[in-house]
Each structure stands twice: as C-alpha cells, then as structure tokens.
Image (cartoon, rainbow, N blue to C red; front, side, top):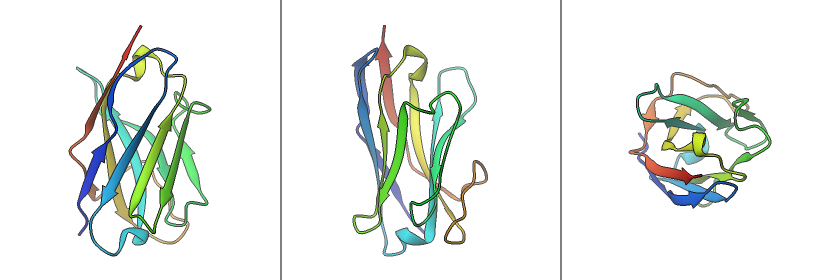
Length: 124
C-alpha cells in the first residue's frame, strides 16, 4: 500500500503559476505509475497528467498540454505538477493517484490509491 498527501494548492491570479507536490509513504514509490486528476464543483473528476515509474513517459489532457508539467523524484518519493499560465477554468480540487504497473506503464484510469486533494483557485 501507499499513502499519498498533496500540498501546494492555493489562490492565484490568472496567468500565474503553482507547483503541486504529492508525497508518498513507503519504500516502493518507484513501483507506481502516478497521475494527477482534478474535480471542479459540480463536475466529474477528470484526468490531468500521468507519469511512468521511471519518469520517461508522460501523458497530458489536451486542456493542460503545454501549460502543465508532471515530474517525479523517486529518491524523495514525490510527484510534482508544475502549473503555468493558469486559467480560471483550472480551479478545482487536485488529487494525485498511484497505480502499480510495469516500468513504462502509464494510464488515465483505474488508479489504486488516492490522496485527499488540494484546492487550487484561479481568480480572473
């Protein structure tokens, strides 16, 4: 099992930047592909970005491609989401998630473990 704790959310003006972090417990962080998701009020949770165990493979939702960057530091058991050029429509609770898989495995769905989320609010 792995426990995930997100941090780094907050209030930012449109055009600004935030970096989210997700710290994982346990010694097997490198065994998990990681993902970021978000849920805005009244909407379903949606995929944002994913990264493979090695960090060599990444995937992004079209809505964030070119603005957000996912990365990981397996030595620190942490995955990051750098968010630039933020828009009001990026306002949501952001969750990180973990899923076991092969070295280059990456997915947008069926994650096994989830964090509690961190609020991101972008003002216009």
